[in-house]
Length: 142
Image (cartoon, rainbow, N blue to C red; front, side):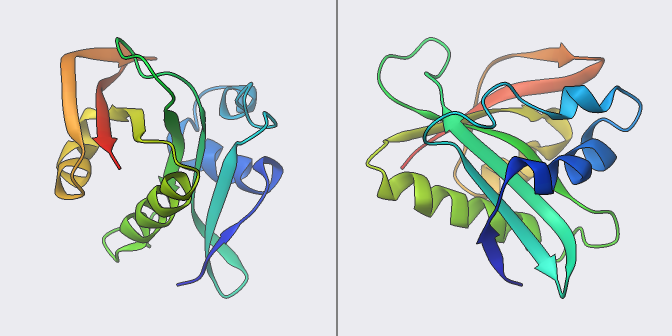
């Protein structure tokens, strides 16, 4: 499945539909979407957007130095379990690594923990809630 760089405007509807369908769509737009260095990736099945993720420069909690924060990782229902999330994550890691940035992190949903661990990400700290959804901080040294 092709993974391509895209814009926040293109992927916001998928972020909304998958991650926060019962919240205002504004919560699916991030203040850093247009920031310098922000990367947006999309996966397509033909012309249908089926997966996305974004990353922007933001220091990791409790760490010094430059890092990228992964946000808005989403795969449309019906396309999950087919490796699309893995392709998106690997493509994003490669793009971040190419910038020379040594660390990537995210506030990942607890239910996605096994996915992140399979790809070499480590959970840090205690579980916490974001709008009623349990999360951990996950990180990976590139």
